[in-house]
Amino acid sequence: MVLKDAKILVIDDDGDVLTALRLMLKPLVKEVIIEKNPNHIYSLVEKGKFDIVILDMNFNGLVNTGNEGIFWLNKIKEIDPAALVILITAYGDIDLAIRSLKEGASDFLVKPWKNEKLIQAVKELLEKKKVRKSPRQNLSVEGTKIVGESEVMNEVFVKLKKVAPTDANVLILGENGTGKDLIAKAIHDNSLRKNKPFVKVDVGALTATLFESELFGYKKGAFTDAREDRKGRFEAAQGGTLFLDEIGNISLRQQARLLTVLQNRHITPLGSNEVIPVDIRLICATNLDLSVLADEEKFRKDLIYRINTVDITVPPLRTRGTDISLLAKHFVEGYTEKYIKDPFSLDKSFISKLKNHSFPGNVRELQYAIERAVIMAEGSLLKEEDLVFSAIEKHQESFGFQDMKLDNIEKNAILTVIERNHGNISKSAKELGITRAALYRRLDKYDL
Image (cartoon, rainbow, N blue to C red; front, side):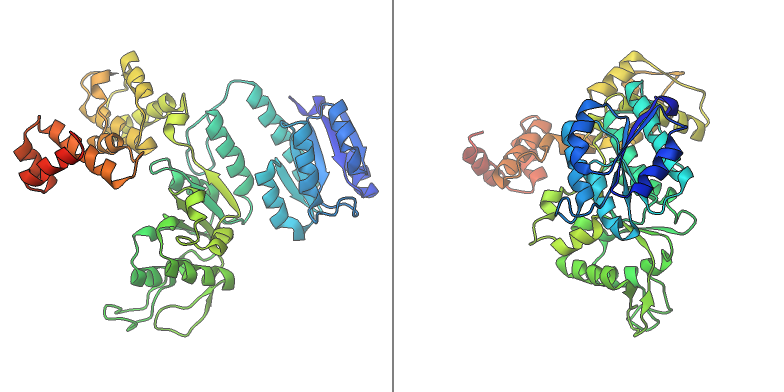
């Protein structure tokens, strides 16, 4: 799909806007259809196959929803789920426009728009449409190398490129080892704040006292070991991006403190009455599902809304198909250079073993396995025997965490230990930290 072959529908109740867009686009594309009344969307979209629909966010009371743009966006998607829709919005509708990305919009532009920016947005969408119809290409995000060409990763890339240039707070979801920190860095590197600090904090590992001092800083003498003033991470990230990893693991008290700062946009260091304004873009990450975070006994709903203007879910490696071998080759090249090795080729048995592994540790597990293979391999061909997966991940996978009932966890633990000790009850009891008699009672209890 190229610009000159494109067919575009423009819907806006402002005649001047329609005229301006038609005059601008007509010399560049095959056809431009303009329409003032959004009620005609049904017949227009059903009759004509448009490559792009440019849709205004607000109309004069034709739909009393308060967010007409999203209403009509959903109607367009009902008729044509693959439709590419660009929303045009006033500055005050930015939050609504960002929400529209979740509803399926492809892009949004702010009035008054710049002609070159609108044309560029149209070109980019047409190019993506072309890519979807052709073999996928590896995508590298500016400033941060992210390897992937699978359908699920392409969805992440599309959302990332839309969200990054905005100042919207982002919540990154995904299992451990999927690369959530890499996505966070990519968002920063593609934002207007890219030349300012990117500060990462593993908040899940902070105690209540450390949480306050690390995030908000402290003055000399604020507590026993406070021998000098220290800036907190919020202040260190001033003008840039603050990335709070494992946000799902902080206490309700810590959540309340964080919410206050996000609402007021200022901090007060420990031991000080000084109020310091903060200007940061917030990105959070967690390995918990949104359904878990929605439990108000564990996580404040008002904080969720604050940190989750847009969410991005990073898929587990096992769902990424050919990305596994693509990532393997990428890591092989990297570690070959790091350890000054001669170039390697990958044997079919090596690739086959990769494809048949479930990767409970995701990309991190793959990376460590490839690093070990490069270090330990003999010759220039990586074979099946060179690929050894972590015993830690195997242990976790054997328990699986599929059934979290205590009785079943205990039963599985006993079976695993007895098998490892080849049926020796004394060794097994010692490893489990119980007496032989206690182990026999449990064997009887579980009918083992």
